Structures are given as C-alpha cells and as structure tokens.
Amino acid sequence: MVFIKLQAANSIDCWVIENTFKFISEHSKSLSQVVFSINISGRSLGDIEFKTIIHSLFRKYKITAGNICFEITETAAIASFDNAIHFIQELKKEGCSFALDDFGSGLSFFAYLKQFPVSTLKIDGIFVRNIDADPIDYAMVKSINEIAHLIQ
Image (cartoon, rainbow, N blue to C red; front, side, top):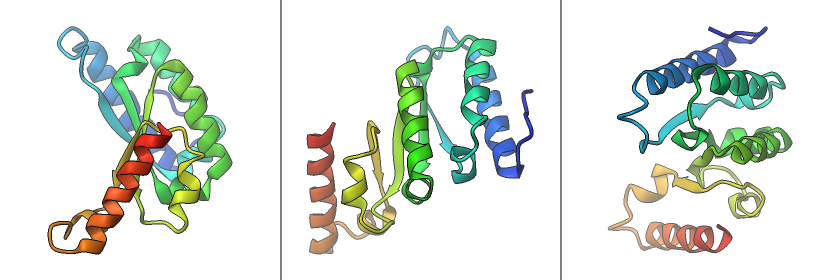
C-alpha cells in the first residue's frame, strides 16, 4: 500500500481508494462498465500529496479513470474551496467524475455551484425526505435540479 506522511483521515481515504482500485483491477473484465463512487474527506482535499498518491494508484493498478467517481461533501468542498477546485479539475482531466454530496446543506450553495466542475449533485436528504408532502422541499429540489442541468 502507498502511504506518504498522511494523517488519519487521509490514511483511511488512501486505504479505501487502494482497495477499490485493486478490486477493480482484479475484476476488470466484468466491471468495465461499472462506476465506483468513493467518498473523499475534507482533510484529504487539503493534502497536497493526495493527488500524487491517487495518480500512482492509477498507474499501479492500471484501471480506467472513467470507472471512478469521487464524492466530496459540499461542506468539505467549501471549506477547502481552492484545493477542491484544483483537485477536481486535475482528476477530471484524467477521466474521473465527481459528485458533490449533501448538496444544499451548506450556506450559499447556489453561489458555489457555478464554480465546482462536478458532473453529479447528490441533494441533501433534508430536502428530499418530505418532497411528496412539503411544497417547499419540492420547489427546492426542482430548482436545484433545473439549475444543475443548465450548468452542466
């Protein structure tokens, strides 16, 4: 396994990524059309060496970046705004996709939405939970969905 002076959260992220990549590599023929979503902690987003580790794991396991979707929570993305954008842009060039998880849980989420080059939004459960009974939840989800489709 590859660990380079990482803190606890980063070590867990690296372990998950490495084991996922290893699994994909071992089952590449039957998983060629499968996309694996991997949650990334906010601490990892702020680690300069983290992207290097991911690149080395792609080379080591020879997997297609299109099989990977990294999920970043809105809160973590906003907390490490510049690092998150750079991380997303660099790995999108390789073919990875990105999901902004728990979207809507942070403040001013529409302002940030335009700046994050993600391909998927996972709307926070607080808005979806009562969508059938609460007209405000329905309107929020509808507007988030409409704007997300315009931005992509």
